[in-house]
Image (tube, rainbow, N blue to C red; front, side):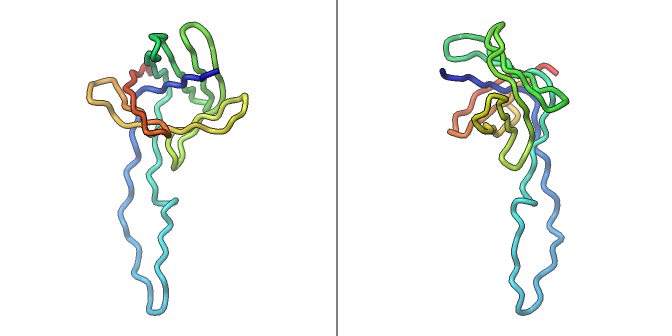
Length: 129
């Protein structure tokens, strides 16, 4: 069964800090910790909505306790936990199967977000917080 997971809303990526690192001493090799320097997304809790390809409303509600629910129309199709990490905003279904992560950027219209999945497909979603 094909699962549809949609996200929408007002997400912003945290800004990277400045680079105050000292130059390595003679004979030392400089090594960058890119994982520590990667920007972390900051996800706003609320409901992100869109329409599936067949016109069904899909809504993902991200709760403050880091749980989520995916609804297709009036039917709950998935629940689980979510977190922000260096891979993006990631949802892990309670039923198993591993996490799914998205890159979320502000959309071109007010109240929208452009959400890109792991396959590079981008869709625009709305947010209610």
